[in-house]
Amino acid sequence: MAKGGFRGGPIGGGGQANMLRQAQKMQDDLLKMQEELETHEYVASSGGGAVTATVTGKRELVSLAIEPDAVDPEDTEMLSDMIVAAVNEALRAAEKAASDNMSRLTGGLNLGGLGL
Image (cartoon, rainbow, N blue to C red; front, top):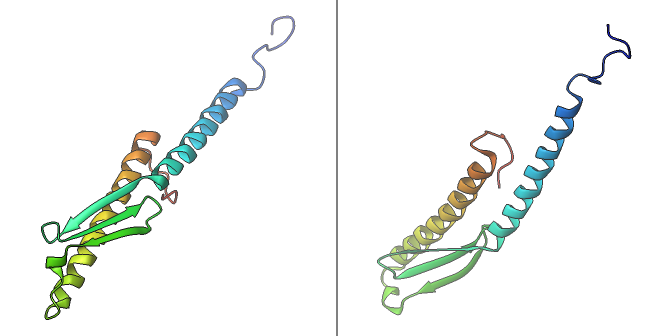
């Protein structure tokens, strides 16, 4: 061995610090993305626009607009179906945005239970 011994330090020492910095940056980016998604609103409609639902990225219904023509006292079941369809579509849009952003952030890595 050369005079002074091994100069590389612990095996992988520099790499571990770099990996920790990258993990911290990914966590910071993830938190920022989550905050942005939670404040964004997603809008969907059904029945040709007769019912419009707005949800947030927190998956909370914040607005439900119903056109007067959609209200038929003889057919409340159809109105209920349109409401459910609009709300579910808005929730799917919020979920897709979260999933797309997560994939973009992680480069397609599957991180298991980190669902947003």
